[in-house]
View 1 (cartoon, rainbow, N blue to C red):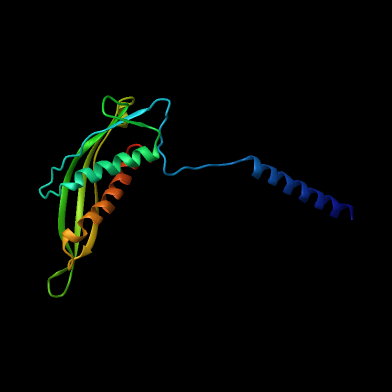
View 2 (tube, one colour):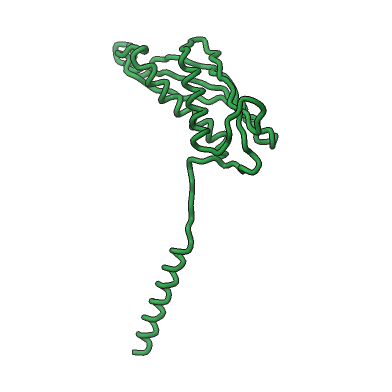
Length: 175
């Protein structure tokens, strides 16, 4: 009987200890933020991304630049500046192309792929070994029966969002 009471007391004590530990300890992860030391990095300059591709769709530049600036503003505490900054992101849109996909038995493509490539130069003015010069690419497929002009704006928005995520994770996200 004493042994049973001792086991019950031990079990209650262990449960109470675990409850106290669970309440007092809190682990917090933030996966959408940047891996930056805000005591060191306070400002970022986002340069223009001119279109250097053979095929040009003028609204692409503004859409991409706005998406990149908005994403960085939302997910970091960095102040976006026009002048000198702790971090600099610039580059150019180097590719905007269409290619046939999913060719059918009668040799016609049932899908067309819109691909956008962006070359990014990320400069860390505080630590030289953190610089990045890389090309990022993303695409979306659409039904070949649709005209590009009918789906272009929606596709560009989706591709731009993906490119911004890739760029953020390779530079500011430090994944």
